[in-house]
Image 1 (tube, one colour):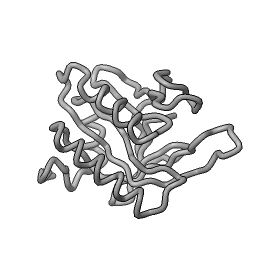
Image 2 (cartoon, one colour; image 1 turned 90 degrees about the vertical axis):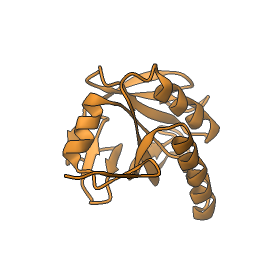
Image 3 (cartoon, rainbow, N blue to C red; image 1 turned 90 degrees about the horizontal axis):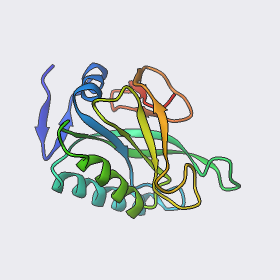
Image 4 (cartoon, rainbow, N blue to C red; image 1 turned 60 degrees about the vertical axis):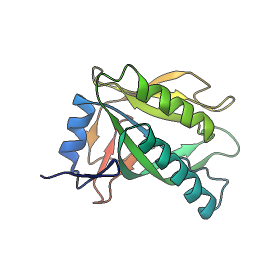
Length: 166
């Protein structure tokens, strides 16, 4: 399969290629969406995040993330968000990890997902005080699993799904 690359956005990726990125590259998942904002505000925030991803030299794939904000709290809600699967090279000296944490904090996210190429499982990193899993707390998430859905999962534009959280 041919993968085109324009403005750091990867196109025409299939699940096999996403899996290969999870093995050969450092990857992460992030969005600027928050459930309390309207669509226009969320779109503006995501454009700002997308610009930051590009300007920091990372590749990305637009995806839809399914997540539970504020789990276990009175304001718990299931959300569907336009998100980014962000891809960096494996020798980036944690550049992607720290970028995700910085952007997750800036955009008031509960957490970001990060997977180092050398690890089998991804981790959720808390980026907000008082929300699960807790600011700077790392929680083991899971391995890449194709064509599954769960409490947290990702859907590509071709409607194929995958988990990095089990």
